[in-house]
Image (cartoon, rainbow, N blue to C red; front, side, top):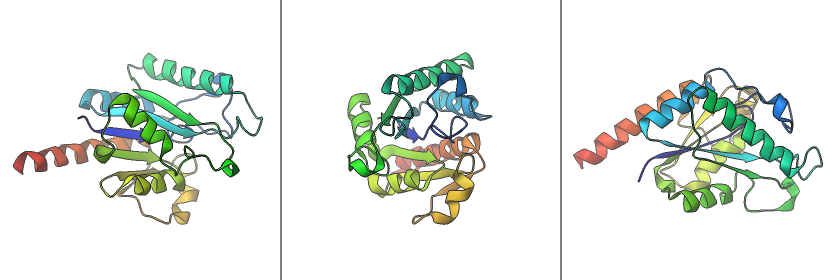
Length: 190
């Protein structure tokens, strides 16, 4: 089974202007497309998992959220990068659903639908909930915090330290690919 990475959207791949609900507001963070392209080339599955409570809060509709995801796919494709899936939680934080990060519902659904082994995965994001998601998925799941978006502010609020802290998504993916290579080498030696 291939390795996979579950990536936050707003603040990690694209600018987070607060409740990104309009496709015209989707602007890739510098290096995001190149990072996804590196994952594609390395054979690592790239899956977006994102909390989008703006839907439940009435900031934008479910269709708006889907249009934003479509725009993200288009912007990445224009630079030769491809996502293997996008999953998002539209619920309010107080709803108690099982899919809002740091709960594992989005990842479990994605893994089942895409045939992924969660034990061979990583989580990359700019929020404490992303790092906590990695911990909730199990001890073999590694996390990288990116300092774009809310990352710098969230850094001091982490209850768990990530395996890596990166200036941006590109640096995080470079670390991840090096770690995948190391893990593959260890498995070959075993």
